[in-house]
Length: 288
Image (cartoon, rainbow, N blue to C red):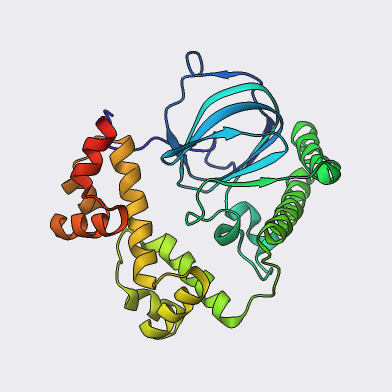
């Protein structure tokens, strides 16, 4: 590690907010020089066929056919190897979908693209293959022809794709109920947490944001995550700290300041409460 920052992949131009392209069929890291990085957009990888390995945060896992891989904005990603890959890569900013999904009763950032569900993947049955392939192929066709209104068509096709994936997710987790008031509060809390975890670490801040007491917010979090609000806040901060420790040369003290801790000793205590070891010991383990 020789950098004080984790490389961020952006769209090719500031105006761009959506991209779809076929996957590179062969990815060999001896030739394909791409370091571990994070994105400033949401990313979908559709693997129709082929094999390989990729790193998402600190875990490496095997790529499987007929699978969507969902990589949230800000998550560390690294494609180790790809062999005979067939599929698509889709990237989109949240602004790209703002009008299309803004009125829906769910938030894809907190279900499909949640940092609390790492290495999210969704397997697709052969019976549903044509449905998903049709959506992706149509988006790719619009990208190539760029006919009148092509971005509007892509926006709606992407919205349909995400809704279909959410249905698949709900079926796979038996989570197909309508959102209760408490579930809406919980998802709103997660949205605020993703925005403010670097600067605000106390439950009362987030309770004020969602308009309930800290005690009620803790009850809601226990109901929907099996954890207290304080624990969820700590886990999100520590997840980012782990990324810095793994992929930069920042000191523990520098990381603690970047994540809003005035006292590095308190940061180390919070880190150990989640990981089981102090950040200094975690650094040693990484170097072994």
